[in-house]
Structures are given as C-alpha cells and as structure tokens.
Image (tube, rainbow, N blue to C red):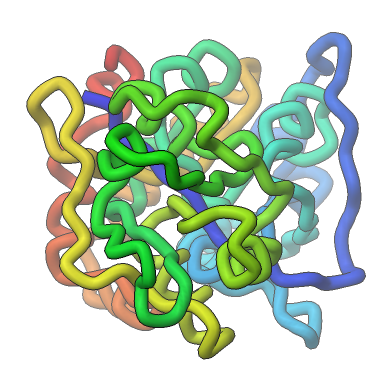
Length: 286
C-alpha cells in the first residue's frame, strides 16, 4: 500500500525560501528549545493543513494542534516559517527550523530522511478538473488509459501513485505549487490536477473555472485504497522532541478539542477515526 498526500499554497510575501543543503546540520534538543523559550515551526502555506493568513497568524490542522502541544510542553513562543513543500525536508536537515506542521504524509522514503511523530490526521485523494469536467475524468487511473495529461505538485506524493498506476511520465505536468493548479487546468495545459480531496475542495472554491471531479474513485494500489496519514516532522537527531510531541499528541487526540480542530478545517469523522488506524512504525515500513 502507498499512503500519500498533497496540498494548497497561498501567495504570501511572508516567509522564507530555502535551498537544499549538501549536509545535515545539528538540530537543537528539546531541552535547548525549552531554554531559549521558542520553537521554529515550518508550514508550506497549504490550506487546510498548515498556512499563514494575511494577518500573519498560523492556521490549519497542523499549526492549531502544534500550538496546543507546545503549551503542554511549556514552550511559550512559536516562530512560524513558511516555505515551499519541497523545501520542508531540506530545511529540517539544514536546521532552518525545528519542526514541520504541514501534515506531511508518512512515507517509507521520507522516513529515511526525517523523523515523524505519530499521525495527527488522515485524508483521501481528489481530482481538480475544468468546469463541467469536459474530459469526463473521475480517477487517476483514467490517465493510464488515455492521452490526457495530469498535473502534480513538485515533491508531492501523487507522483508515486501515478507511477504505480502505470501513468507515463510524459503525461505528467509538474507545477511548483498548488496556486498554479487553477490556471494549469483551466487553460488546458493539463486536463486535471491530482491532490488530496481537501486541497482539491479548497482550490475549487477559488474559481468557477474549475471544480472537484464528481464520483471520484480512490486509487487502489497493491489491492488497497490509497489514504494518507499526516504527521509532524523532525530532523533525524530530534528524537527527544519527536517523542515528546508524540506523547502529548496522543493525549490531545483523546479530547473533543482535537476533533473540533479537524472538523473546522474540513476533515470528516472518517478522517478523524482513520487517523488512529495506522502508526508511524507501520507506515514507515511500507
């Protein structure tokens, strides 16, 4: 099974651009973070997972939960950092931030590069198409059986999904962020955009030129429907911080407040229930 995930980027001037490092840098320990009284947490400006609004306030399922966890850990101040999704792992490895709250999917290849907390969320897939769905597209598999092109975001999980389904590379159009998806689909550069259901829903709200594909069929890979499990992310030498976050997260997920946060950002009851159906060890093992 290949559990996966993708998202939405708002165009904000606030944030930083990160370059991939040549080597990993030493991350601060949990005790060091407590001593300085501040933690640096990155988001990819993707609604509803983790983003910074026009007033500079961090929002989303990741930031809202992370904020509660930091309170429990006695860390009073958070420096929110925005960057592109593809820069999140390099940024952790270069010690540009201490933690990522972008609901990044726990995947075996990523587990070789970073540490994940236990899952905070779970979510399925979706397809953004032009108004009226002129090509009658309802599944990722459709692109393995036609000449239509499908757009994906650089660094996103959908690449592996489409490859597993037999979609040729020359039918994939890579875009730098979710904000480009509407124009890519509405102008015909690609017939659709592959992303999580939550991302597709948010994009469809932004323009009448696009919509979510109705009657979408979830991808089935290795006999299993594809579903993603999103977690907080840390550098390889931040095990003490990761363990502390996982411990507090487990407590917080027992509260109504945690479920209300997910509901506020469009996650379903099924998404909340499914978030506990896999653990990080199993997801990293593939």
